[in-house]
Length: 169
Image (tube, one colour):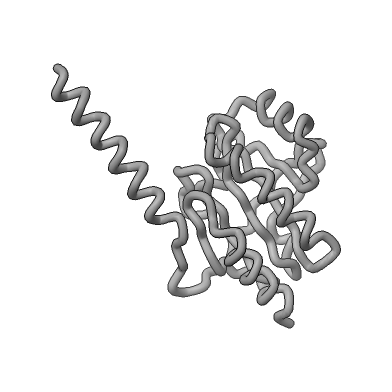
């Protein structure tokens, strides 16, 4: 019994290590970001296609994810740094996240960007069956997925890439 518990702990550690190793994953070929309908926390409808013409940071997160909560101030800082440029941020709370927790988190931290609750998991499915949080997807002005980060990204490198993408015509 003790060895089974030990094995479970070891396998869990291996899974966490593998997720950390994937923290900076690059896509070999650019694919178009999916056009997904969503509802903002204020109840207004939108589509991801509405964001075409901007560089978009889509962050899949959960209030129960400690890395997500830890990185959120950097997501806010990134959003604020590029506010006014051709840039937007979309924070997508995972389907298992209780809506009341998401609303409370967004309001108490005064998140300055669009927050969406992915109630049915459709956005996560459309964006490549996102399972791990945080997962961040960076989309260029043409609506192509440029980078996918699983785990916390290197924000200095992310900002460099955002600068390059905003400068593109």
